[in-house]
Length: 531
Image (tube, rainbow, N blue to C red; front, top):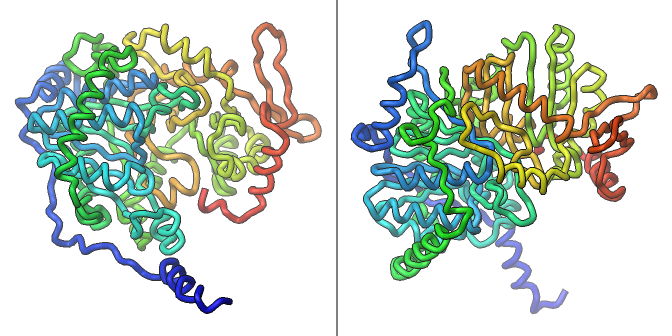
């Protein structure tokens, strides 16, 4: 080794293995949901709407919810909530892209802050690559505060942060929610990015959110406050030097404002959906029932010993334990493990019909997760589970369907794949045609054990029955049905237009051999706990 290279090597080694600590956050100010919102238009219209709904038989106040399966409608609903807010906006997201959707929402957040709305934006540091410079600029607004959850030590290199602190950095905040004036909230599977709102030229996800109002909104706000004030959440100016962000703010604010003005003239942003309570939309588009928000405690991200009762999976286990007749599970990333396979086999043995819908290899955007799922397909089928994998070729027709669809129709149930060009992303569980869970949680070890998640459990037989029937009816056209042949080999059955009998594939459809081989190879590694 040349002597002249030794100092450089030592510097690199110190960067790789040195310990850089996060700043002390103990003196950071706490803040909480605002309850003085009764005079806001959103609160008043929600109150009028809820007054017309009955309580349950045991006098428990019920909430109301509106399913948003169309990507364009889901974005429009977010934009309208931000524009309607008068006092407070709380947003919690895993991913926030710097594309048209992300810029438009950022522009409207600044406009809301300009009119006096308190904006709190909590982002996962790994999942929201907006960059410290952009976030600091927004943070400079006196009515906007941005915090990053479980931030990286090294601000300039995510890869280096992963290498030096993997056990902590590996745990991410996967939660997704937006709450306006503590009166209307939105929870579901969508991040902020064009692909989640049917606005991407190449990729789009079939997803599902629910807008909710009523007592359940307080639960969303309480969960947000818990994360916002948790030691793992750091204010943006604690992590990066402000520099001349103050001087840049006015220029960037004007650029975003100009962008919002131009975007409003475009058809995609211009056709906002008037759906919120008290608007001119058909009130029957909303469903009523008891609702409960479930979420992981943020301590889960610290890899600390914690009470299992604080885990979303534990909270939801009681509902799954009560299933008696039918269980329909929709999860884009599905890795059941041996325990999961046994659970579904036991349900089938008890007479419960179990149907699972996930991505095919051709449709998934994460081949590594598919490798963890693929090894359990035969066991699930032998147990009697009905297994469907979403097709990758729904793009063009689904987009046409979404454009011609009347999304304001009363009792509009979500159609899996209705906004998808490539991949399923919705996470929804339908139990005994009585209860529905919609949220951010996948059925895989990462959601159960590593990342934090959120979702809302809705007790509405009317909605659950309608959603269940709509999804099941669409599956023959939207998904491959898996089965075992007489020799125990996998087959994929595909209903094709103009053919009387389904087309039978004997290997993962519509993917080249090398991708099938790579997924098989990944399945040999002991990485299931990270999937």
